[in-house]
Length: 270
Image (tube, rainbow, N blue to C red):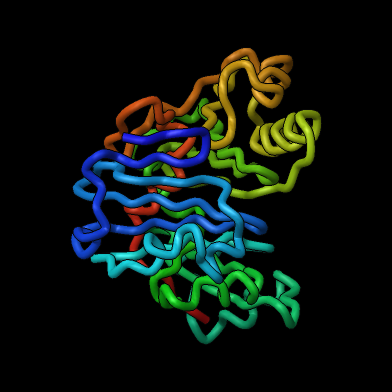
C-alpha cells in the first residue's frame, strides 16, 4: 500500500483487472477526484487533481484510459432546480431550464434524484468536453450518491448535512425521512461558511441548540472551518457513513461523496 495526502493505492490494485473494477470520477470547477472500487472495496483514489489531467491525462494516463467494467462521472452544477417527479415531463424541460438562466457555454441535464424529485441542472460545456471520452450517459449529478447514502441512513429531522468542498458547500435536509431541502453555495472563508449555514438553518426553522450539523468532505476536527462552525453550533458530528471498505489511514468522511457515486445509475441528457 502507498499513500500520501492526495492519493491512495491498495496493494491488491492492478489495472490488469480493470475490467472488473468501477471507476468513479467527481468533477469540480477547477479540479477532480477519482476512486477505483471493486466489491465495495476502495482500491485507489486521488483528490484535488488538476482538471487538465482529466482532459489530457499524463500522470494518470494509464488509470484514466483503462477499460473498466463501469464508469460513473459526477458533474457539478452552475445552477439547479428540483422538480417534483409528478410535475416533470421531458417536453417541459425547456420551461424549467428558464429558471436557470442558461448561457451559451452551458448545457442542461436532468435526472431522477430520488423517488419524488427530478433535478434539472446546468453545467459548463468545457467540463462536459473534458469527460466526453467516458460517455455522457455515464454522468450523474455530483451529489446524487451522497444524497442516496444519507437517505438510506434514516436521517432524523434534527440533522443538517454539509458536504464541504474546496470552494463549495452543499446542504441537505430531510423531514420525516423525505428530502425537503438541497442546495449548494460557493464560499471563500470560514465566516462565509457560517453565514450560509445560518441562512439555510433559518430558512428551515432549525435552531442551533436543537440542530446537529453532520459534516463530510474537505473538513476535519481542528481545522478553521469546523472550528468556526462550533462557535455557533454546539452539536457537530463527522459523518460516519461508509459506502466502501477503506483501509490504512484514509478518512471515510473525506471520500464519502466520491465513493457514494457507486450508488448511482446514469442520467438523462436534455
